[in-house]
Length: 237
Image (cartoon, rainbow, N blue to C red; front, top):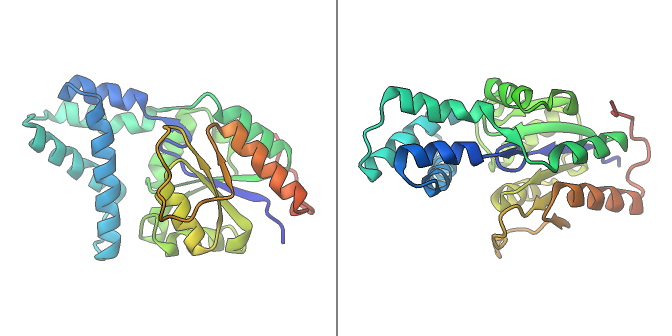
């Protein structure tokens, strides 16, 4: 068994949503509306999975933005709508991301961007964030015609990467995502960016830290201690 491949959720885990929150604040008067919108987006994507509604993450993002606006009594202009949704492609990484990715790659790990966002948006996000050279693969859940945390999405990425699902590890700041990955058979690592309690009913990863650097150190330590790194190829730049 060789655990040489690490998957990274993108939105919030890798990219800082603060600029998006600022746009929500300018439009709705409260930056906290951004968090409510994102939670609604994740919720409705899960409902669509369970009830077999075929859609895209981008379509759902627009629908939920309109829903939030209606609930807040705000009349969105088309320009404001495009400005908010377009901001998703122009986010920057958290400061701890690049050093951690570089460290993992220097140790021979293969790094993969893995998100519910469309492949086109993912590529734009990663390019704008200056991370193109730090990912070997980019995989969208939409390629599996579903969304995380459905098990088939995690199984799809394992097949796509030609790896046994148990040899993969997902890094995410969302407990529903790490839980979903573990239920599907992956390893996981949770990065606690917001100090929120981990859901007590969800499976808890063996790697748990508050910074990406600490996550990287724990992954390397666990794989080294378990002698799971033998045979890794070098993916260092």
